[in-house]
Image (tube, rainbow, N blue to C red; front, side):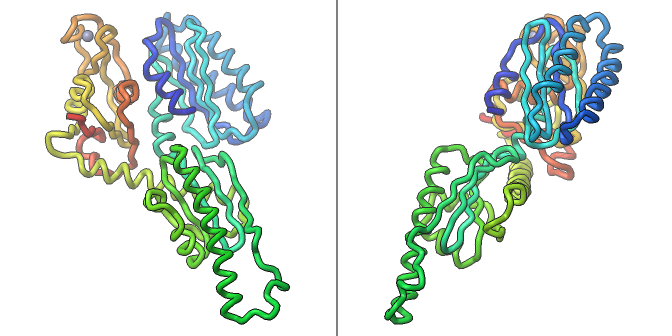
Length: 364
Ligand SMILES: [Zn+2]
């Protein structure tokens, strides 16, 4: 869902009129919050109106549409709302998220998707299997929320009367065979979820060590290789607790991975610093773009050939057409996403801080 939305935003042509990108925190879905959102919109649009002046045509329509949407369509579980709108083109694309966002309102000719890319990267989908000797709960955690849950019970759990007359070893073997069958069945279910290809962030297991070890014995190698951590949650944990524990693990892992990859940016297949990374984007050879949380620069983008640059020239040095001043990091993220490169946002301190907080792994 979010992949499609990012792709759609990154590949749409520049808007002729204003393009509104709004991120707003909606953790408390009540009347006071709606007032707070209205106030935020009023203040922010007032501030922006001064800078965009005549280009503000259609802006009032967009604000009214956003207010209507917040009033009427916000789901109670939504924690963060992102809205992208081009009022002159009847384009209105809202995205309700189960996680909080940083309040931000930007108006330009293109969408601001840096925050969306950052949220997606730090919340990849993961599968969770909670296992004990008798039951299993399987979850898909996506974007900080639970997408579905499958409960498996071991139907063959022996009851007391099964044990009559059996030797102790016989009972133990019988119990173990039952547990094995149950773990095998649960492992097959988990493998099916993983094989559907929706588990980008990995697999999380939870249970007592003995059960987890036994269960892993039945996991296909390709699934076991995706295990990113083992938790010890109570089998009866609430959905909220399960989600929170998984999200912390998934985020930590995603951020750690991005950081490790950024540390390897060197040699001829890498670019660091705004000048080099922008040049690589213009040559369309970026495979992965890395930006730190605080990386920031103003720059320009050609309205015709779409190349990016750092110091604003009078006209595009390539095609001589007019250029437009822009938030350079936003423009870089949009260009990278539009070309199918991956975008990773990393915390500071990071290995690329000394390169203005931007780096790229190159395809060639
Ligand atoms: Zn140009």
